[in-house]
Length: 484
Image (cartoon, rainbow, N blue to C red):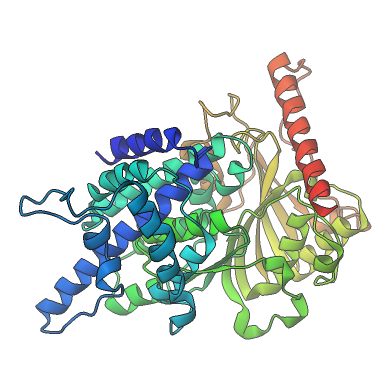
């Protein structure tokens, strides 16, 4: 039922002059979903309060509650179309009264980790783009059919929401930055193995895939006590996100997974000076896929000891600094980080190897990220001890990855099994740091266990790489144009 409802909503938004892309569909579905979720949450809290003999005060004033403006019901339980706003009356109410009212919650909230603050922040960051009040009425009616009351309902909804985010990535433009393949995230979380009580951080949170997966991992790791459940809800997951749409999607994704008031802040992580990070700001675990290919302005670079315009290299410095001693990280980065010879990359590699134990590098094939042919690696490291030896695993698949044939968890099963003991195999090997070039710290080591086959590349593979390079060049050019 949920899946069909989402399809129907997309069809309605497709007809609306204010929504032109998959990104708009997700954004507009998100704010209406959020208000419906909030209504169900309030009903659950009111019921719980009643059972324990307490009274519950609603967060929203009566006229702004879902059951009053969005879905007033008759005695038959169906929407009363005499009371339900539609057309211009509905858009005037939403744009002129509802959004300004909800926006005010940000300034009135007690603290940033409350649901009230999240309401205010979400509705400060976006606007209703659905121009037709009749289309908006149709979307509201569809969303009113959805329920978020049981664990099973929330679970199904979170999966569908993930699918929407993935579609947004597949749709091209800049949508791909919101979506890291779920099997890859699951694998990174397994290897880093967070524990209850760890503070887990993603400074480039996007759609919050890493935090959602870590939440699921910890929630299912054992039978949780009430205290442990509260720790997971309130003091485990932290994120920062620069872009408004990604910020909203990230919060919505975490809420649908079961985190009521996600600790996600809308800010540009890279504007923080590394010298200002103190022990109280540090985390036990970093899980992230920072954006790569971007170019940061000179004033942003001043926040870092090693100056570079490459966004991912700045994020990596931030992650190293913000980890506690003994803290663990799994970070996705372009594979050129292992070999680039520019001064900044060499200095960051040296810093990483001297300050952290870079114990594992997972080398991923092109096509891992749908719609982007850029090759990536995952760096797994622990802060506090220098690296003595790096274990490499090269994921060699007997197929090309793409939209119709994406990465799956089985593809990564051998990596997870071998990584436990850093075992050598046809696809894995270890390199001692003392044996690498001490001037460049080049880590792009060829697999010594795999025989090179002198075969010609397939034309399709060459075309895919050319397309990926074109897209990367366009992205870099756009970044430069934005700076001008």
